[in-house]
Length: 389
Image (cartoon, rainbow, N blue to C red; front, side):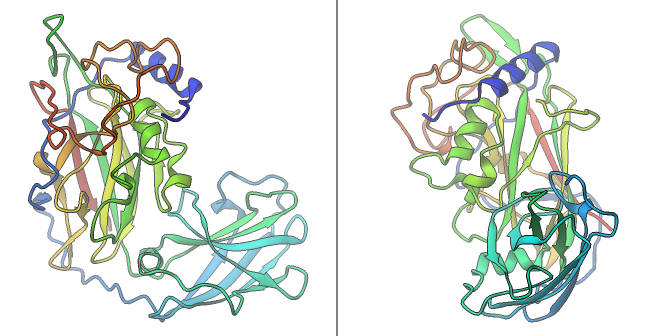
């Protein structure tokens, strides 16, 4: 197992001690039918155009879009760009910047939704000391997955200076093809949800901060790969509710951390919820992970033929509550399992991080698929996906 975060573990323990607990719905196998959503009556007849490749997109950059917020930025710091991606993923772009705190040291095209950060896809070059930047002739083409990210508005320009090495101005590349969706993960468990056989008691099941991704992978959710051994992001969420490693471990992954109505990151108990906004075009899929906290390394995620939820059906955006059978408890295969709700090495009770034994079965899969089970009296997690105007 990788080293756990001592701070995150203690934070979860403290927050859980203060809150009522949380429970999650019954599990399903890895091979459920992909019948993802129950229609809630919203009829969106808007045609979705995923043909963004080839069109020129204008982008404005400023300091307000940067994460983390830059310091010492002049009021007039700005940039403007035009970018084009052809059907083969070849990118052409021209970016001009002005009034920065100092010369632009670097400029890149990154992958990440507005409000999150992500990896560099293409580094830009300059011939005039940093005022104008272009894509070099030997830059790699975008992959099919990355072209999808361009179409859904998941790429951005980022310009770096000496004073703001992480970025001074940023601009989201919005091709205008995407539909926005509000995703809500709601804890609907009660104190009677989880049966603890050894004590004859019941308890709620808190859920942790986690990560999500929008993708076009036809085979599996990138959040879950590789399936023979958990990636560093999945292990951190499944064992500690720590989502910080995910963006580096899985390109395109973005964290969600702060419960609705809260000011700081933390877990959610009964009645709590996480909300975040994503964008997608026809053919895009969505997946998420959040820790089943009274466990050693269990988590909730989508489970169907490709372990993701379709964002469009018949060319139209989905809308409504995800059916319970398309959400399941999974095991990351990183820590040996103890009885849910009682284990000394589970996050609420462990004396120190990284104290559990290694799981001899390293497969990432649903607990059903691994021949495991848990006794739940009711659902814990409700997921709704709602198109936005």
